[in-house]
Structure formats: structure tokens, C-alpha cells
Length: 169
Image (cartoon, rainbow, N blue to C red; front, side, top):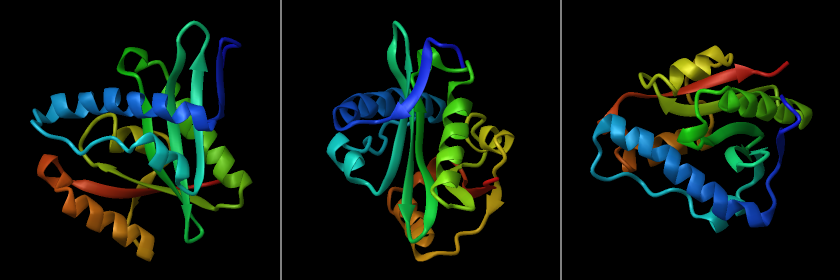
């Protein structure tokens, strides 16, 4: 990572910007799926109140360009959201954020990191596979609730959803 790029914990005042980054990132999915509607981004105050941690990436001259949020629920570390501004995409920033999230989760005592994503979207499951995640089955009440939320939001209308897990070393 160059000196002009840093990954740090999000502060309370950062979450409004993170909501904007999520909205911008979601535009890639809505364009890919030609979706006329899409679930709204997580409101800043709600995201800030989640248990776990949020890391952001700042670039000199560009400000905050991406973030990763990991929930810690039922002893599980779950990568809830990874978003990078589209104009800063394809530069390895998402991979750096995932690596930082895995390191932080390991440091907090977790043995694995889970996520849910679209199976066939190139910057979803194939990307996460390149970061060490493999398909897995939901086993906890929390993970099963995530599947229910996805069903209620009808996310599968745009493609198959899967859970993936990465061991932490």
C-alpha cells in the first residue's frame, strides 16, 4: 500500500460518506441487472450502530474511496458490506479492504469470516473466491436469518445467492 493510501477504522462522522459509497457501488449491480428498483443502502446511523467493525480506505487527494463492514454476531464474523467507488474500482482496493477485514477478524479471535453474495457476478463470488472464500452452508440462526432477509427482499430475482466462508490464519 502506498503512503498515499491508508486503511483505518471508521469514526461516527464517516458513516454518511460510507452510505454514499454503497449507493454508488450498488449502481453497478442495478446496471448489470437492469433493475428498476433496488433495496436502499443501509442508513448511516443504522450501519454505525451495528456490532462489529468498519474499516475505510482513504486516498490522498480523493478522500474515502471504499469500506468494508464486518458484523460480529453469535460469535460469527460476517462481512456484511464491501463497497468501493466505481471510479476507483479495479485497482486492488477491494482486495486490500478484504485482507484488512480478515486480519482484524483474526485479531479479534475469529477463526473464519463469512459473507453472502451473488454467485455469478464477476466482482462478487468469483472475486471473493480469489480472496480465499469458498461456498458454504448457513449453520447458525444469524446466517439463516440473512437468507430470510434476502428472500424477503427478493434478491434472488437477479441471480443465485450463496454464502461463502474464508478460514482465518
